[in-house]
Image (cartoon, rainbow, N blue to C red; front, side):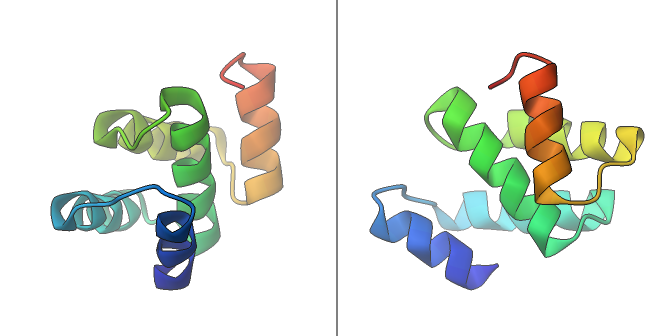
Length: 84
């Protein structure tokens, strides 16, 4: 996941230490895989245009509630609910 965050930073997205800590907190609190966390970050950035921790955590909780376990399903879900 570190490589993913570094790639995003190369594209211009900046993550403070607090944001990165929150990403790992969300991962741990929802028991999400790295791939699902990356999908959550991607969707958050597409919808919010910046990292929004509460939106990101809500997404991860929503994914867990709906049994979503991979990026493709997460993106389909985001499209079907009108997020994307």
